[in-house]
Amino acid sequence: MISSYPMVDAVLISVDGKLVVEAYVEPMGRDELRQLNSVTKSVLAALVGIAAEERGLDPKAPFGALFEMIFLPALKRMS
Image (cartoon, rainbow, N blue to C red; front, side, top):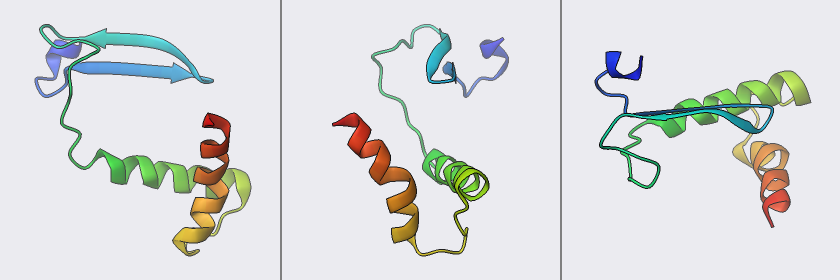
């Protein structure tokens, strides 16, 4: 299925924090670096949407409010 999309060389899907699908197109593998281009904007937009719906974040709030609500708790869990 992945080979149907020539620009895609890896697919990872997680559900409830557990990796349920991990697939690579040869010769790429888990340890190869990939070019992500503009994916950060999409991920950040998704996080803002989740925070707006689940935690009541105003999407027009300053970045500091977003940082305190989303990223700071995640960083604390990582340490």
